[in-house]
Amino acid sequence: MEAVDGVDAVERGGGEDLEGAERELLAARDLAPDEPGVRYNLGKIYELTKRDAESVAEYERFIRLSPDDARGNNIRARLGLWYENHDRLDEANARLATSASP
Image 1 (cartoon, rainbow, N blue to C red):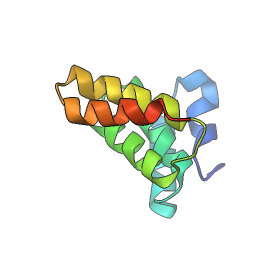
Image 2: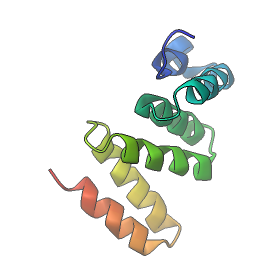
Image 3: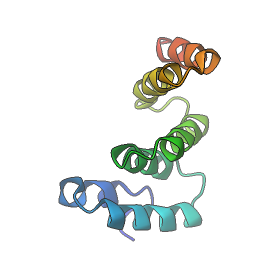
Image 4: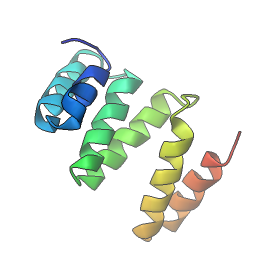
């Protein structure tokens, strides 16, 4: 495995081998379940492959593990919109409020 956080797995081949990247990231998650980069990249793959529930779960875990990560505000905003689109308004408001925080 080239990178514990799976960045190489997602970026390899311009994202064309998502199945291979997912396999590598799942193996990385088994080795380092609290590595935020693994969770972020799994969320990204699940989002690209339209697996919303899995994507949301991985992104939520990413935010819990790394609340100050620079990618967090973008993810919070996207999660807020997803929750809003699925009539989960309390969660949407919470996520959108935290994405606007400095």
